[in-house]
Amino acid sequence: MANKVLVIRSSMIKKELSYSESLVSRFVKYYREFHPEDSIIELDLNQIPMASITITQKNFTSYFNEKDSDYYINQLKNVNKVIYTTPMTNFNVTSMTKNYLDHILVAGKTFDYKYTKQGEARGLLPHLKVQILATQGAPYGWYLWGNHATYLKGTWEFVGAKVVEPILICGTKVQELHQNDANLLIGSKILAKGGGLPALGPEKTIDKFEQYIKEAAKKF
Ligand SMILES: Cc1cc2nc3c(=O)[nH]c(=O)nc-3n(C[C@H](O)[C@H](O)[C@H](O)COP(=O)(O)O)c2cc1C
Image 1: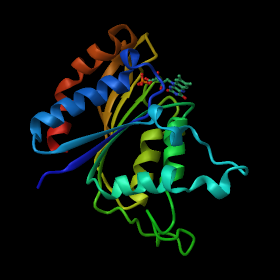
Image 2 (image 1 turned 180 degrees about the horizontal axis):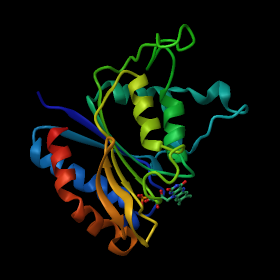
Image 3 (image 1 turned 60 degrees about the vertical axis):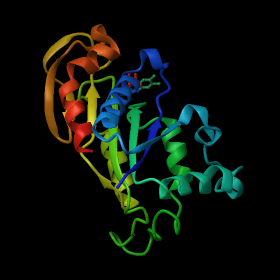
Image 4 (image 1 turned 60 degrees about the horizontal axis):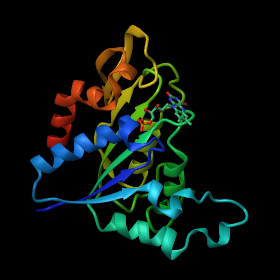
């Protein structure tokens, strides 16, 4: 069966300078090669007004409207895979990602009511399979309390999705070589260490990790 794959980008960094952009582009390139029958739908949160709207007292009653909320929930109901990319921004996902999630996490639409009993909420998007592609400036482990990839994984699982092991590229801002600094994780497995990613830049960093990205794209 051919899949419909929604690719969501949420980096505020210019495409030519962006590690997450290089990561998602390479992942999608290989995904297309291994799954030529599937169709790809692109959603860049920089380009859609809803992802710049933060929920406040002033807009609360009109926030979950058809254009900003239902449209994107229906989009998720009409695809079966999501590739989601986000860089760490002040220890969390980007604000665009948070705004997107605030619009699509709606009781009765993407999950059953969450305040009944712990663990009893039911995700309403069980048909989705999700691949998270994350980046961060610091090497893995420097600020474990700010784990955007884990937060995003838990959030997609909450709506019932099956989330495969996230790919996390870390240390995009730390030039010094630190032997023990992790630069690439898939799930909890550290696959590369050493630092030096800023000197390589986005494309050469992805070249360096190519085999893992290719393998993950094939499996997804
Ligand atoms: C406003 C801002 C806040 C950031 N906050 C963090 C942070 O809290 N922790 C971290 O490790 N990196 C942080 N970074 C670095 C980015 O995660 C990193 O440079 C990332 O690679 C940028 O996105 P890109 O992958 O699309 O290039 C921040 C970058 C910006 C621009």
